[in-house]
Length: 374
Image (cartoon, rainbow, N blue to C red; front, side, top):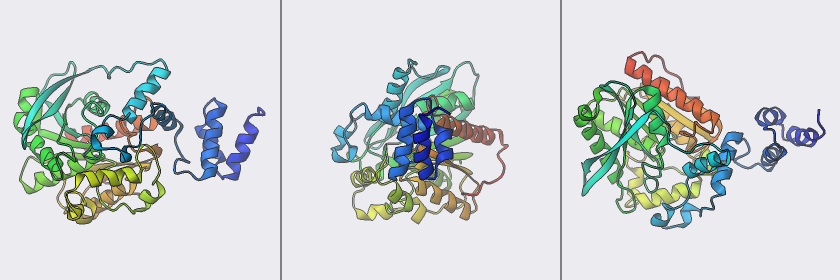
């Protein structure tokens, strides 16, 4: 054994984590020692996956300001984890171009006070009509856009051989709650009515949403049930904003996590709601107030290092208690926003592959079984 490994292993042994330290180590002394130090200090990032760490380091290097300290307009200009992925790819001498094999086209749907964009992702060289995935991006209802969340719909379109309709919606605070939920439902109705025009099969539709988009996808599934719309065959909620209680165990454990922390979540809700009563609305407090009976099968994805981890876990629990089928997929060592980073984070690729498999099984009518939340 080389001499440089001895101090690293000694620190890891003192923390009781020698096995994980060795397993996650990379060939640089810095990475090994950084992992050991974070474990000893008790940071919420102590169990950070090394791939995830590289993304967060690259994002930090872009010099952004804390979102929760800024007006919304300024917050939208800050570097995002997507920018961090691109910076990391450049550092590694890799291309930052979008994944090939998918063509994107922007269309528009009507909503209150005007129109919003729907970006249609179509896999190349495949004859339609194809199954449809309606995708809602994250950003706490306040920041981010279709460009920020471009990687996930591309990966799903290619992997699931499906058309993905990525939905833009009005942002808070310019448009307060429930504008986002209303737009999400309006977009779903428009997509169903216009599916044939872009090669989609409206009888085979699924919903996918990340973070705030996970909230929207769940709300659209509820609206489809209550308004007698075409019911989605499957819903994927990736670390969803499913409750307004900011004192869950995962909020406490990850209060200072990156790239999402508790102060940011408080800032998102403060910008979104009209008044405190909105925080108890079932469209925001899904896990506390919403009726989840009679919904389609769900896949719920959570990340260990994420204030929203318990929101996702509670959503999976409540869906199962309501008699629903749930595939609960929890990924250790990764943070909020890991999904869609499959080109640089191995666990993201694992999660994307699992979600795509769930969608393909739903479209094929072969989805079976229920995985109980862990």
